[in-house]
Amino acid sequence: MKLSDIGERKVVKDILSLLQNDIAGDDAAYIPLDDRYLLVSSDMVRKSTHLPDVMSARDIGWFVASINLSDIAAMGGEVIGLLLSLSIPSNLEEDFVLSIIDGAKECVEKFGGKILGGDTKEHDEITICGTAIGTVPKDEILLRSGARPGDIVAVTGTLGKAGAGYLAIKNSIEEIPKTGLIRPAPRVEEGRKLAESRWATSCMDISDGLSSSLYQLSDASGVGFLIYRDKIPVDPLAFRIGRILDVDPYSIAIDFGGDYELLVTVPEDKYDDAKKHVNLTEIGRVIREKDNRIVCHGVERRLYDRGYEHFRQ
Amino acid sequence: MKLSDIGERKVVKDILSLLQNDIAGDDAAYIPLDDRYLLVSSDMVRKSTHLPDVMSARDIGWFVASINLSDIAAMGGEVIGLLLSLSIPSNLEEDFVLSIIDGAKECVEKFGGKILGGDTKEHDEITICGTAIGTVPKDEILLRSGARPGDIVAVTGTLGKAGAGYLAIKNSIEEIPKTGLIRPAPRVEEGRKLAESRWATSCMDISDGLSSSLYQLSDASGVGFLIYRDKIPVDPLAFRIGRILDVDPYSIAIDFGGDYELLVTVPEDKYDDAKKHVNLTEIGRVIREKDNRIVCHGVERRLYDRGYEHFRQ
Image (cartoon, rainbow over all chains, first blue to last red; front, top):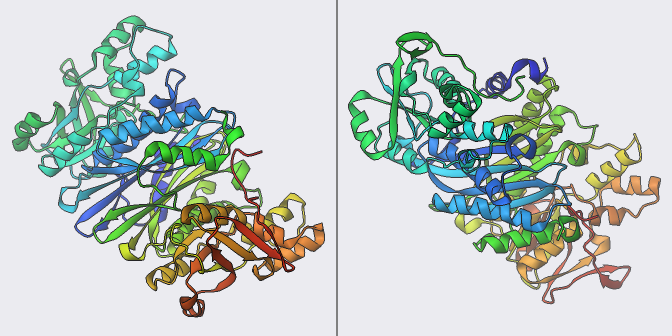
């Protein structure tokens, strides 16, 4: 079977079952090292798919750093640093490359780490692989597998800002800022707080869209979710671009990826405490049935997995 | 300045000076973690440059794992494992991808680690980023910077087998095996022995060719090397292909990359012990002057850096 017939997530599942070890498909790999877990996550981006022309070289560096740190954040980790493996066309200016590193450095240092190493190769198209390294105390690690029926489902920040930026670029709408898309903020502090206070029962970052993330969390925890559509913290930019393009802003917030917010489940009795310290919005409840439902204008429907997936047409 | 005017190593140097932290340009990044260093190294390969058609999918997996583990070996580390980030065309068969992972798994497990995680993306060309993770006790780490005048310069195994394979493919010479090129063996056990016995004063892996590696070691240690050309352990395959193509087998061994043997310096009084436990061949001496010389038929000449470098025409 060709990859285009299968879709990325099935391929990754097949890879995991091939490996037959204890990789649970979390955001980062976690490796026991004394009383801590070492967290390692690798993510590759390429110019044509991930790096629109509006991104400066510094933006590219920030972006690569950010999406990798986001995986450390989702596990509740502290950031140690980032390795950058750059494959770039040889006719590129050196300043461009140095600015990529500079942007990555800005992001990594802002979140408490440093650039640990770099390597350059040639490629027809800018292709960058970032590897983020972090650690987390063993008893604090946040996994995708801990959600329990009755838990509150919540997200950090707002959703749909990256989707709004993407649609603005695609439709040449200048007045919509693209910052949400090109300079996502990894939720490292939020992840740490949720981890060290043991408020969250499960956590992941929303890289491929809320609907898709809920399906992945559902798979890992063996539970379902009941989401209240009107509680979703839709970003004002999604409303603005929604009006301009006549697109439902909620579907931008639910099905577009790139926001890199955290999706967490928190037991009801801990939620007030958690909300005091982390910018959380309750969007629903964990349910026992492994089924994802969304309530819209009082009517409960199936929530479809419409998030982004590689290889899928 | 365009990258093609500068060359890879100058770019990497500029990146390091931009970062202004303590990255010495060793094979892997090393991060203090209690009484050990965590070793992390990332290396990206792409089909057209690194993965000739004679490589099966399993070979590709082995190769990516091997060149990354080689960086852990060069620092004297134990292997924890490998992360694989695969960017692949969507019309590829899933079995091909699973075989890549299987080949990587074979290599990593052979050297004491496991596959820690995997991720797939789309790309026009197969582009794979491996990240190897290892650890080494702090007082055992092998760096590039410790070579001292008078030390013996030695290499593990033989040189020129990868170069022979490369030339055989390029010139369609079927009778020369390509194993040295497509299935390099990372010298993990050798690196560990050299590290734990504190025999080596400096170490690196020969990925870009012996001449180039000597220049890099010279830069890091602030010393020079006097190499005896006829002592270099040239692989029999380099002699065979040399005869067929009328090419000097010594220049294949000196200037071609891809052998992934270790280049080490060992104090004279420890060399006999080291040689008893590690397959080493003495090829020269560390000299005080930062100048690399080669003795050929009794005549001493300058040794030129003719190794492989990205971006350089």
